[in-house]
Length: 263
Image 1 (tube, rainbow, N blue to C red):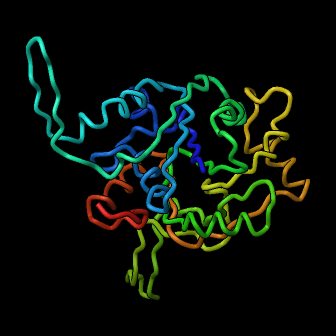
Image 2 (cartoon, rainbow, N blue to C red):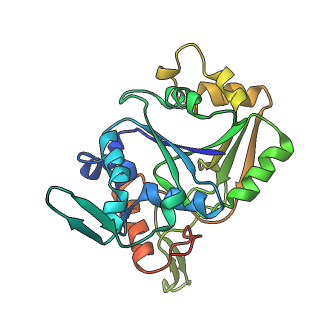
Image 3 (cartoon, helix red, strand yellow):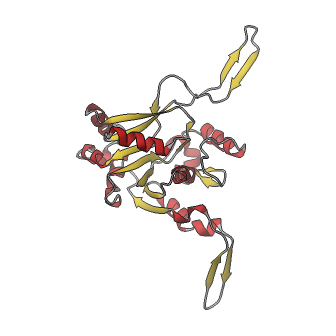
């Protein structure tokens, strides 16, 4: 089963970082956030990826083309019979990554539509965004989707708080400060979707100019074919520089709830 990741947007709200590289390549520690998302799926046994490239997609191609070079100690034999010896192995050696140029200005429905030829005979696929992490139970998500057998399952999450939450005593003393609380009321689409091939019937006449999250999803919902998998655990997008800094601090402190794999 393929994992399709949307990697083509321009990330304009993080322009200070994305002016020079695509948003999925922004690092958490020493690896891009895209790698962290892929590691989450791989931890549950899903290691076939299709990346929908667009803005500065060549940088993502370079990352994977040079992956073994960048993660291994190497001995080079120079001269007329050059030889390369890699001294290390990594857990990603069994990943299969398909990189598809879906256009720099293409909207998300068009990006999804363009990867259809790479799905093979799979009746369904995972779909998510290249800029958010979470400790979603991917196996449970898939089992939920297969039980109800609707066209799309999205993961409904609590949006993270944008401001610090302060618990005050009557005299003004701060009893508790939570830097980034999870909002307990209301839910939003956190990505981590499972999509049946039937979804391609809802893409419309001009998918390249259509956001999958708008007209197609609304039509799927109106047809009674949209379900939500409720996730009450950790989820965090990386939409702003403050969130970029927060996620990196969590990783540096060894407090990264989305790290469901072993190094």
